[in-house]
Image 1 (cartoon, rainbow over the protein chains, first blue to last red):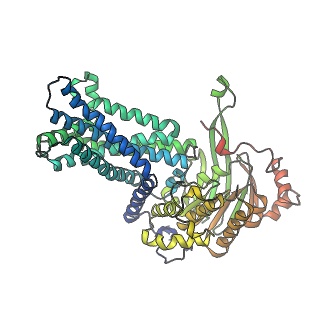
Image 2 (cartoon, rainbow over the protein chains, first blue to last red):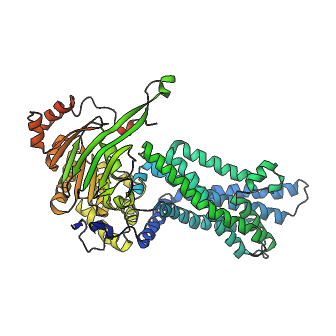
Image 3 (spheres, chains in turn yellow, purple):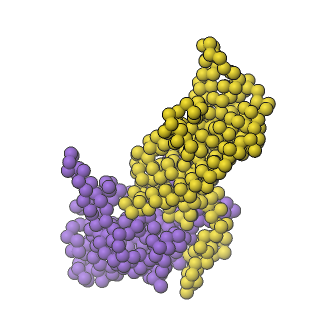
Amino acid sequence: MRLRSRIPPPGAGAATPLAFDGELVSHGSLREQLIGLGGVVERNSYLIKRYGWWELAFFIWTVANTLTVVFIAKGVSAGGGHLNVQRETTTLLIGAVIWAYLGIIFEILTETVAWERWEGTIEYTFMAPLSRAVHLGGMGLFSVLYGVARTALLFVVIALFFGLHLAAADFGAALLLLAIASISFVGLGMITAVLPLISPEKGAQLGFIAQGLLLVVSGVYYPVSILPQWMQWIATVSPATYALRGIRSAVLNGAGVSGCWSDIWPLLILGVVSIPLGLAVFRAGERYAKRHGKLKRSG
Amino acid sequence: MYAVEVSNLEKRFERRSAGRGRSARRRRSVAALAGVSFVIERRECVAILGQNGSGKSTLVRALSTLLLPDGGTAKVFGRDVVRDAGEVRRLVNRVSVEASFFKKMSALENLSYAARFYGLTPRITRARIPEILERVGFPVVRASAPMEELSRGMQQKVALARALLTSPVLLLLDEPTTGLDPRSKREVQSFITDIRAEHDTTILLCTHDLAEAEALAERVGILHAGRLLALERSEDLLRRYDAATLEEAFFSATGSAIDLDARPDEADEVWA
């Protein structure tokens, strides 16, 4: 038996799986999955484009917020505190920039799912023959690309504002650390993205709580060593802890890859663990949503 | 091999009780599908009639792998919707009562990324999207306008285009003309008739529009409170219920008129 849908006409270059003789011709080739991955990136870029003014407003807000944090170093110095203003300014800047980067990744992964729930498109995304790994991986890839672009711009704007001299910095090592940390950040983002899948109303708020926990324990603006012991234990499983320490070491001390190794290997382990964990949690959430009829349009 | 083979399909939902206080916290189990069985032949168009809340959307969602059934099986061209969900997704697409899109994005953008999810490259969609939009009667000059600026009828045409873009061999239409103005309704129905005439597509149409069911489908089913009471050619249905019209047959089968005494729409129900 030969079945072939003829919209559009056969031979027009359609994806092959719709033509079959008893068996499906294609079970979802790697090529088709990669095209699907591109589709996720394409979708998110359309959203950013359509909400361009919002993005500009958020960027200005982030610049203002970062300036506020970074001025603290100057404020302490002006108040009689003894510190290396240049060094502390850079330390705070790195904290604020990495925090902004983490925020973008969480926001894109979590809010895109929430958005899809509000608009009702999540059902069409889940109906498509796109593996969940590719679907979430595409959102992760977009969030990293967009996050790097936006935070790099933020870093340059603030560094120029304060006239920071970073001649000794090893930016290559810093970028490598950021790239490795991004794997874990995306894995954690996948976990928080399951929350709006189950409840778009409460999910986003819970995502903020998870993000806030990382802010407190990861040494964004202060060393982890000043935290109570139980918080330091939590910090050991936060990828942001190692990303911040390693990137500060690379930018402030010019430490190369070998010098940052003590922060790179924990990030690699966390990355290897967090992506499968994120996928497993999201898939469990998806099963729950499908069992309880939670995918219907909300709002 | 049947295009669709549903056997004793069951789905229950927990529903919060109406009211305030302690009674509002109580939950009761409601059968959305209670042992539904039927088959659809390849290239057949079957309409399922039912009031709001009768289980039509639940059936469509189960067939499109969006709901996990509690019991029974559903197969699409021999593929189980739970076990072989990935393969089923390649064969099915759906148009629902709500044309769900990213409203700030244009029709072109919405269709473009959706096609990518089915492995269609930009080279293919550049030519195909305008072609399909034109085919469904959507003015291509509006293709770059945000969806929120389009009428409900136009949005529904884009929804049809989205479903057809991926060349589904099984098309699930869940009240595709509900809420449309008479002209848009006629256009969408005429397009469905064209698909039936020209293409190798099996259609399951869920509706509460009796005339639509009679005009488009070869067999008509009556779904009531999660039970499929009948699924026959409309003339057989009239004979079985000794009725002159489908409306009378529906009344005889269910004890209520299709547009009256409607239970809350599934979209408005609060599932726990």
